[in-house]
Image (cartoon, rainbow, N blue to C red; front, side, top):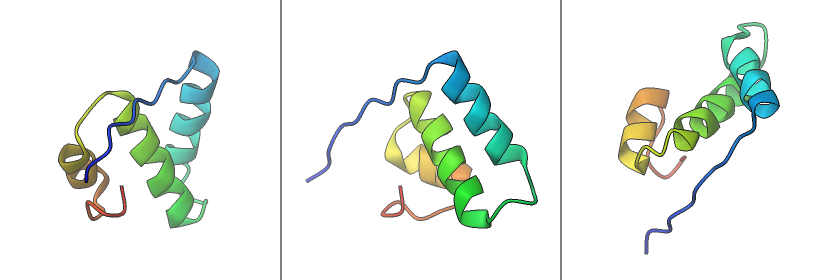
Length: 60
């Protein structure tokens, strides 16, 4: 069964995650996780988050 989760980020957390997502020297798993959290904070559904982040739906 699908679960609904609402991610709320303050400005500091959002800027930190944006920095991580844009830092190509970090491990790919950290970049993908940051992207997933940022996209989830935009209240996109899981399918859209997975498509935009370039990961599978179960990974989200």
